[in-house]
Length: 300
Length: 277
Image 1 (cartoon, rainbow over the protein chains, first blue to last red):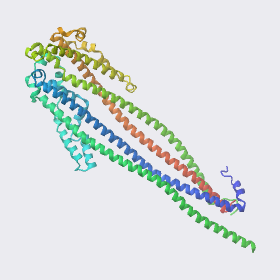
Image 2 (image 1 turned 30 degrees about the vertical axis):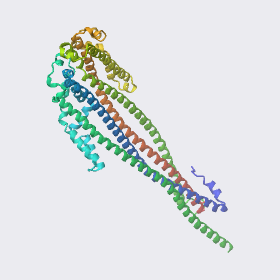
Image 3 (image 1 turned 45 degrees about the vertical axis):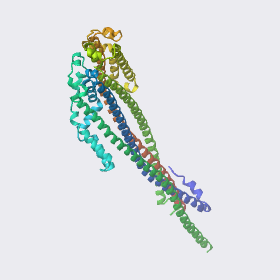
Image 4 (image 1 turned 60 degrees about the vertical axis):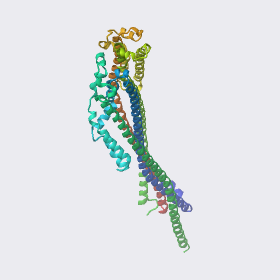
């Protein structure tokens, strides 16, 4: 089976007058083909580099999203802790003031005012998670502290604050070992006798009961955690800013490469065109020389 | 060399043209194949993304409702003994009673006690509505468990809660206990007031225990979301690498087509220059 009908081209090119003209057209075609291949190769090379950069860009976008999410979570947690602490403080102020009156002194005990918060906080899933974290010295937060040092350097105020606050939080390790679920029966107590026959030592304004001490520790823990989350919030906001800068640089590099691709293609075209002109010049000269020699032979 | 016979370079150009034509065809086929693969990956990626959004919405709702319950616990548990202790002292301690400005203040305190108990029932009803509606959420239904339905069923059946805990009350029937919240309280004894206090506590205790049963479901939900996000990241990388392959195959196809043309042109040039035609 014939792939190319050579007889057609044969008839077409047999005319010697046209031969030179067709050769010129073929040369132009070859020139454009080589140019197209060069352009495609330049595009191939640039696209490969851009693909790598785009992959890095995607990673950076993911990193930015992650740091923004963390920053938002820490900010939201701080808001919740502050709200919780304010509610507790407002409630306690009012009740502690009432306890200092003859009326309040008769009806308010540490079991009424402080125990519910201790019991509920220690039962909550978030608190159980925090307990698990600070029970171990080598925890997720410790990794964050080390990462902050890598990010800012040892002397930075955020690193110092984070480490100091983290150390303070880890000191609550023994406190977390306490089991406040034992107080279940005191919280859900249905016996009137137990409610009214309380020890005078459990009065609110004495500030020396074990439950009060634990409650104070709990409040201090929340305050310290809020402080710790503040540093983490700043840290992740800075990571977010830094990633945004890297994204910006990456995008600029992609735009630069795209522009450079066009310029390289134009430059390649010019260079090849010059080479083409030179080749054409020598080819025409050679053909003319051959024609002159043929003419001389014919005269002889 | 005889006219009409092809030389060695002509054969080489011909073979190269044929090779690059086949290569261009293979590249085109690979582009089509990878496009199909990419389409399936993109659909899967979009599905996972939508699924994560729905799961996040479910988790946020559960967390918000959980916070509402927590707020209820913090205020209610701190007040759990406040009214009954006041009433006990008023009934048994004249000195304490004299600390109140007048009898109306005492009546107000008792009214507040009953009223805040009704308010608590109203709040539990709102909690029920939240969880009941959520138990018919499409995302939740896909889990095929009855945890939210059971929770809402359990907390809305207040009479059943009372019936189950009758040993904690002085009035020994549910009807009597319900009437305590409806009747004029001027003749109530201390044991009646204690029952009102215990009605509140029984409801709170049930709510507390039932809420704790939902926690493992929320934890599981968080884990599922985490896994799905990881899965989404892998899918995204797959789409990205498939797209890269598609780009490479398109460019290879283009280069092969140009090379085919180039070798054809070289073939014609060779034929012309060697006077084959």
